[in-house]
Length: 199
Image 1 (tube, rainbow, N blue to C red):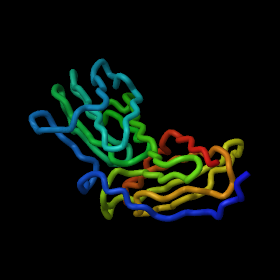
Image 2: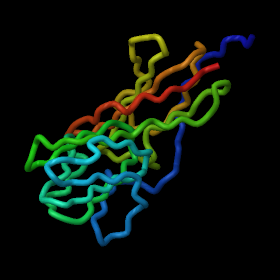
Image 3: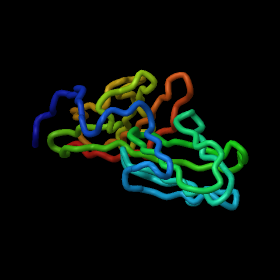
């Protein structure tokens, strides 16, 4: 049986992509990254209404009728479009609600999970954004919860850091979630919980 480990919680930088000034938006006719999810915009609905993509993957809204895709927290806004595609890259973890500004009953959601690399024995590097630097208008909240508990505890709050080492002394499974602050405009919902084991 291994002796208990001292808690380790250190910031880690994860430079993977070039700097982002915000969510990256591309409109038809401009080169864009490969699409990770496609949402059809027609018949007064977004289909599918909820999609899940990885950090720095994209969502394409394919317009077939006059609508908008407008973030509830000001992360993006397509403006009124009747045709063509509107593409947004999502570098940050969270659950991003949106609507059509002309038809408020039309709603949707983009979910982006936290990423983890490591092992149960050595601990995990948690990453809640794929950015290489954090813009002034972005901050992140990160929480953890031990399996079996009902209480989330703060790992980071309103941080500009992009990643951290998670290796608590208590063994077991932990859930991790994060959300993104659009400073001065709003806060995303929490990302889908990610399970990480500690041995």
